[in-house]
Image (cartoon, rainbow, N blue to C red; front, top):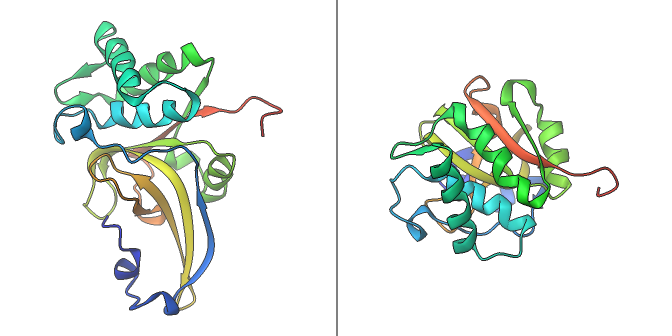
Length: 197
């Protein structure tokens, strides 16, 4: 979705909206697929993975890209059409091992807005893989990095937005959580150890 959520909601200005909550995860960068190849070369999951690992690593993004690309090639996780849905979790898990990160994934169907907010509030970046559409047709078969959230009230209705780095642009975009197809969207994140929260 375009980054102008006011236009999406139908509000003319900030004065018409009430921001109920707003949170940004520190360390999620404005990465684009074009930094590592072309925009449409199927590496959106790889770039999202680099963005997530960048929160846990001191390596430069280019080094992280070389690391994850090597894992992808060595394990046949990556093709020119991208990383298949069957390979995404094994790839995510293997990429986190050098950093002793415990990988987790879940279909959006089994996750609530409250749970996603809690994960984000802990400063945990999340990869959102949409195997179909985002519910509006803007993103199709695409992976993005969730870097925060914003809850907005407009005309007595609450909208829950995920803030994302979409790998196409350097600005933050918004996805309407309530429109995401629950059966065809999956989340990938590294769990925090007890005591780290």
